[in-house]
Length: 153
Image 1 (cartoon, rainbow, N blue to C red):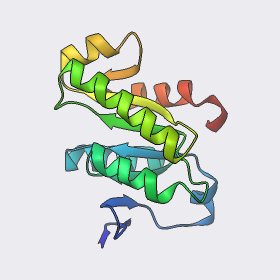
Image 2 (tube, one colour):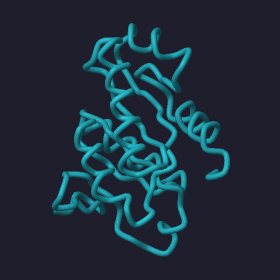
Image 3 (cartoon, helix red, strand yellow):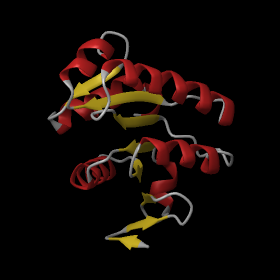
Image 4 (cartoon, rainbow, N blue to C red):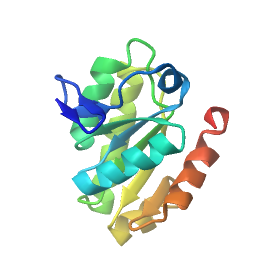
């Protein structure tokens, strides 16, 4: 299925831009976001900033995507992860599970940037994780991505 210029893969409900030579050299960022409007915003913002975004509809879809798509070396440099619907303890548990599964499946962990509307999640995870409280400014997200992925900038 195609959404605008994005192509949805048949295996997991993640969308990615059509492959072009410029996209192949761009740093890959995986987006796990529940809200379609925010998915589109992040997708276009990252693509315009020179990144290769792949959008997954939720956290679980991102885990499935990692299992199926990173074997060919297409490991994202960063994962934008929406944890808005979780409490602080659930968010910590999910991150622990994500890291263990990703390490087992892929071997290389991307930088994780937590996006959340839950102030408790932001307060608890903020000191230990890269976290942004929604709503955030696009330039703040791009600055954080550049900060945590300096080799990819």
